[in-house]
View 1 (cartoon, rainbow, N blue to C red):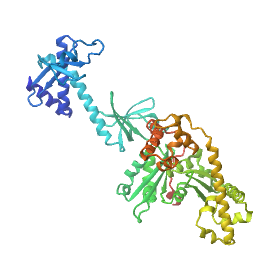
View 2 (tube, rainbow, N blue to C red; view 1 turned 60 degrees about the vertical axis):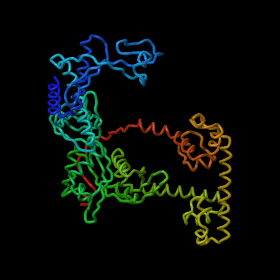
View 3 (tube, one colour; view 1 turned 180 degrees about the vertical axis):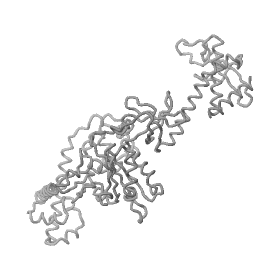
Length: 523
């Protein structure tokens, strides 16, 4: 019988490509099941097979329970601690005691009992093996044949009896797909589920577009050209940002190919999606200008605090800059990471004049100066009281039409106004009550909560945005305590990140299928 066991293990392991240890575990489980069935009782059994000889032993087991435990639920496999402690020193609650019992023979009956267990274990091992294999391939393009379509979900046979799925939301809208079609997708998830490995592909992700260009443009694979980012409105339009690491290479032209051959292949794979190839620039304003192609940008104003840019174009190009259903501006924003506001040159001038006038009025009011003096300051780049009060003195002395007495007076006025505002703000916050979540958070005291509220830190969210140094300025405390308070306040952020999911919105229904690029337009 021992030799027969070893033969079974070798045969199954070789045939299915499964580790022998998994087969041994399955046989032990099967023999234990056959033993329990033969005994006719609900006993606990363990079988141990010698991996070298194939010999095996069988043990009956009882779990040790605390004497205070409620009446036994299973009398045939549980025992009280006080009954076994004398013979088993060192035993603990939850441990098992064992005694040898007769083993069943590994014959026809035991083999039949083992069959289902072995099959199940082998299937589980095969599924895990496939999931692990494809887990390492996440980020690759996977191709196969459409096997069937279920409620918009496309099941793809990728070979070796393995199926992948392209969910309805991961398919290009209105893309015609039929059984037997060959199809590709970007592998973004591989999990092992009860029904088998779940391989999820996407045809709408920006990564899919990037991988297609890597296939079609050899210079990308050779690291001569780098794709920095990509943005898509699946099935309609896309933009990719490219940069050459070799000055002799035109990255846009290389991606377009001779007469658009390379980009045309990519477009055909994406159901006619129009692809704009954008030249990446380390100057973010210039990058945005490039990304707005084919619209021509006349001027651009950068607001780093709000991470936004105001883009001015001729009125005749406004609709082109925005794009159908806002498509062009949306893709440019996704590609660059900036919030982009498009307007006509006239609107931009009016907005700039309005903002300039507001700054001018504020300077006149705060510094109590006439318009001419305020204009001089504004023309020299002074737009706030902080700049007037604290820029190096020599910078203001170098301004024409300003003598030293005027400069000193302006700086003193600016400092006085800033001080008055600070005192006023502090007085307004003095009676501010801390929010309930700040008062009740772990590690917070009522006194500290009121001190924080007096400084404008009213909620847990306000506290989460502080740094350790800022918190130490409020009250003298240990740095570790300050760090712990901040991390406690930030805990909801991490919880939200864990639950966050990404959804893709497909809203456009344009019919354009022409593939263009900035380079092609110039050609």
